[in-house]
Length: 94
View 1 (spheres, rainbow, N blue to C red):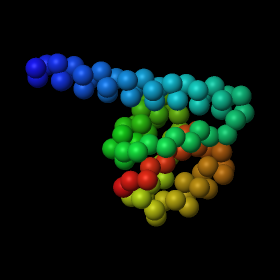
View 2: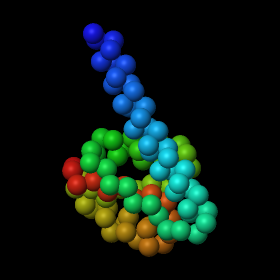
View 3: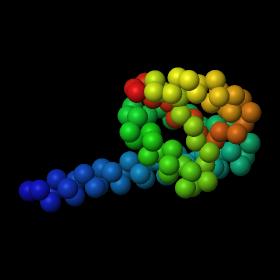
């Protein structure tokens, strides 16, 4: 029974990774065509940290706004305005 749950957990984790990869590919294509940044709302801060790391590995410039980084909001906003952010991840939790 334990291995079934582990496999299910891995499947769900891989599915989340696949969804994020789709967002990053779409973002790269849209940015190359001249579009602005993509906004992703993520319900869990822990997942958001993983997504930011994954974005960096994919060559996507990602920043986040959440309740844990209020002191950085002005800096992030300025980077979005300057066009240096490809993906803005927003989370209501901290």
